[in-house]
Image 1 (cartoon, each protein chain N blue to C red):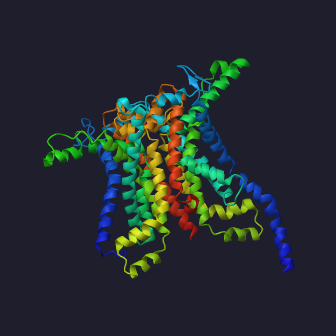
Image 2: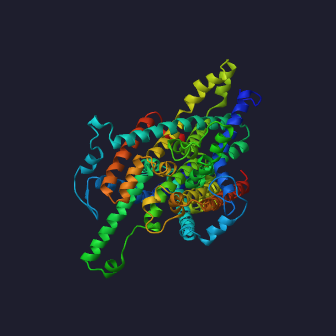
Image 3: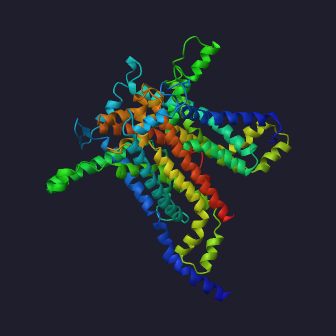
Length: 306
Length: 290
C-alpha cells in the first residue's frame, strides 16, 4: 500500500503543478477573440450611444439625445402610436408568430425522429437531412421562394387554374406572410436540435410504465414528454426569438424592403453614418433581448443540457 | 406504444415528409429554374433547357464581380475553418477542468450565439472606426508619413470581418467539444499517462484520434457558417464584399435567372463540402472501430 501511494503521488505531482495551469491557458486564444470582437465592441456600443455626431464624425460626449430621439412623441398618444413603438410591436409580432410555428413543427419533427425512428442509423440520417440546409446559404433559401410565391409563381398558377381566385394574389411574396414563412423555413432547425436532444434523454421505460398503467398517447405526450422536453423547448425558443428580434436581412429581402424592424432601423442609421443613434438603438435591442432570455432561463439550467 | 402499425405513425411519417419537402422543395425549384433557356424568366414555365445562365455567370455578364467575391468567400471560409478548429479544440481541452474565468467564458460563448448579429456588427464597426481615428491621430501628431499618406482604414475582411465571423463560428465549435468530452472515455488517456506518455503525446496519439470525427464536424461548421455568413459581416467587411453580401445586393437589382444560376453554384459548393465532411467523418469513425 505505502509504495503504491508514494509512487502515485510522485507521478501525480507534476500533473498538479505543471499541467493544470497550462491546460487552462489553452483557452486563451479563444478568450482573446471574444475580448476583442465581443466584449470591447459591446462596451463601445454602450459608450458611443451617449456620444454626439455630425455628418462627418462622432464626437465624444455624454448626452441622452440619441435615446430621447428614439422615443420622441412616444408618450403622447394623440397621434396614435409612434413609429418606434409600431416597429417594436411589429417585430414582437414576428417573434411570436415565428416562435409558435417553429415550436409546433420543430416539436413534432423531433418527436418523430426520437420516438418513431428506431434504428440509430436512420435517426442520424434523417436528423442530418434536417440539418443540411442550415449549412447552405440563407439568402439563396429566401430567393428560392420567388418562383413559388411570386405573381406568376406556382402557387398563383395553382390558384388561378383551379379557380380559387380570379386574380394573382399579391400577399404571397414581399409581405408579412412571406417573412414568417422564410423565418419558419430557416429557423425551425433551432427548435428541432435542442428538443430532439431532450427527447433522446427521456428514459423509455418511464413511457412504457405509463402506457402499461393505461395512459393514452395524448396523456403520455402531455404529462411526460412535454414536461421532460422543457429545457429543449426553452433553448430552442431562445434561439428563435433572439434571431428574429435582431433580424434585418430576412425582413428586408422577404418583405420587399417595405417592412420595418428594430434591426433595420440600426442598419439604416449605420448606412447614414448616424453611428451614435444606431448604437442607442442597439443598446435598447440588446436590453430587450437579454430581458426575454433572462425570463426564459429562469426556467432551466442551460449548462446541464449539453 | 410507438408501434409502426398505428395511425399516429403514418401521420408522423406524412408530416415529416411534408417538412422535408418544405425544407428542400424551394431550393430544388431554383436549381431547376437555373437551367432556363435564354428567354426564360424568374418563374415557371421552363423555356427550354440550357446552361445559358451559367455561361452568362461565367462570363460575368451584367453581374458585379462575382468571381472575386466567390474567391474571397472561399479563402475567408478556409481561414475561419482553421481558426475555429484550432481555437475551439484548445478551449475544449481547457474546459475539461475548471479554470479561472471558465464560467465567464462559457456564458460569453452562449451570449455570442444569441446577441443580435446587427448589434455585434455595429460594435465591431465602431471599434475599428475608433482604431482608425486613433491611428490617424497618432500618425499626424507624430508625423508618421506612412500613416499620413496611405492609411485608409483598418476595417477589412481579414481583420474586422474575420473577427466578427469567429464570434459566430467559435461557439458552435466549443459546444461540439463539450458534447464530445461529456461522452469521452477517459480511461484510454489515463492508460497512456500511466505508461509514461507526456501530455502532448497523450493528446496526439490518444485524444486526437478519438475526437477526430468531431473535429471534422467543427470544420464543417466553421467553413459553411463563414461561407454563408451575412448578418455579422454586413457592416465590417470593408471594401471587398463576400459572396453572401453580393448576393443580397443582387436580390433587389437582378431580374434574370442568373441569380438562380449563382444560387445553384453556391448551393453546390455547400453540398460538396457537406458531402466531403460526412464521408470523411464516416471514414474516421470506421477506422477508429468503436
